[in-house]
Image (cartoon, rainbow, N blue to C red; front, side):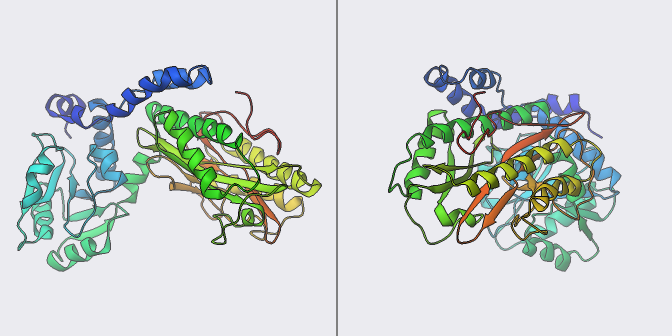
Length: 421
């Protein structure tokens, strides 16, 4: 296996880091510093991924590939390719990707006419094998596995498109193709301290953006107008971000209704959205009322908050993912909003990182044991069609002995969607 030191010596990955975002943060700190000292501290400590980060990721991937007893691991463009190599390429009908093999730097498959563009992103020490328009990329994958692989078993990153899978099966039937989620999930599912810092900052920024935008609620405001205010507030912190608002009866639709309506006094306002820091996502939902909440709204909000707190308390190393979902669902059912998915319509949460929704999931039937460094959304809800819906969502990170909320600023009450710190 290639050593991390050797990788660092030959790699040119420094050019692939996302330093631009860090510079942008520093230029916006003065604008926002007086608003939030904790965020100022977080952003000053943001450091882009560097050679050592990618070396560690490839080293772990190589170890997992060997444990899976496969010859190589193929990754096409998407979050996993970005995770392992720093290369952000687009998906098209032309097969492009990296073959990860224990003991070697990545070997790339690329169409010939894109080679020079690819070389702008890929370190010179890493091999690129090209195919002309009248040739097959699947033959290249076959020869790479034959030349360097330990055997003829190829693990495929789970989001790989079907035409690539079937292309390899057709042109190289001697290759055994297996699910590569063991490699990608066990790498991406456990976040490092640097990744957690990105997530911490992203979640805090989104909450601060919401807080500012909520101060501008007014009668007759349309959801897209509130969404634009939220985008503007994210931009003040130097990142892109968004929020999907639903008003009144539409808040009972977990992802909104197509029947858009403006804001009226007494409406529940439910907003779900997020932003990105260094490519890592936040995901935050808040439910409040424009005007005076009814007793039922207050009651439902308190039940949902209690469910979220129960899930946070249950989330700790060694506990099955389904048990965290169950902890929240039990609270809601015991309050009379059950059984099962009758009012709490969806799973409790999903993993979060380079994708807004990613492995692993807090859902009934998932017996995966939680580990430190895993990150999840924690988003219980109660939805009453024809009336309103309430959801409270914060992301959390698993620690050595429990879990904590990312970004702080937890919901306090239906009248106070954010704590003071």
